[in-house]
Image (cartoon, rainbow, N blue to C red):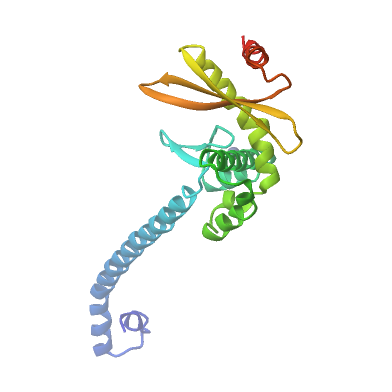
Length: 241
Ligand SMILES: [Zn+2]
């Protein structure tokens, strides 16, 4: 209505002119209103911008490899600081070096999990056949875990990991403990299905205020006399000096 009154032609009636002159005052009011409107619109748009920016920032820092270190964006995978905002962060995540390192780290975590699973089977004296079905159970139980979905371990691999990776480490640890404390040896002979005689050796020692009994080795013996058994055990112990 106010806009219409301002646009009145000169040939309008006196009454209309009065209205038009009064409209000059209203014009000032109108400008003020428009100014206020623009200000409110600007503040709204500014608040809208803030609303848009905040969720973006939250979304960005949801990525596990990205951290805020002293106010700067830091890539944990490449171990570098990223200058700039979302565009540069996204570009960083698409680089070959980043993808390759991320893939290597994931494979490393999968290997660690497979080793832990094998160690658990040994510790609790469980059959390696469990490794045939347990990874599938993990994948079903934790469908949002990339590691659980990437497990590729069966009973054969669990056996190989135990014999090739865990056993040497466990023996080295046991030997280093035995070098620092007195220990006693328990042994017993047994004949296996191939009629070969085996000698199982268990050690008992004091460690961290506890008595520990640990399997040491399974030795093949030909001479089962006291002298023959002594020689076999001594030969084995001498290999660790
Ligand atoms: Zn990176």
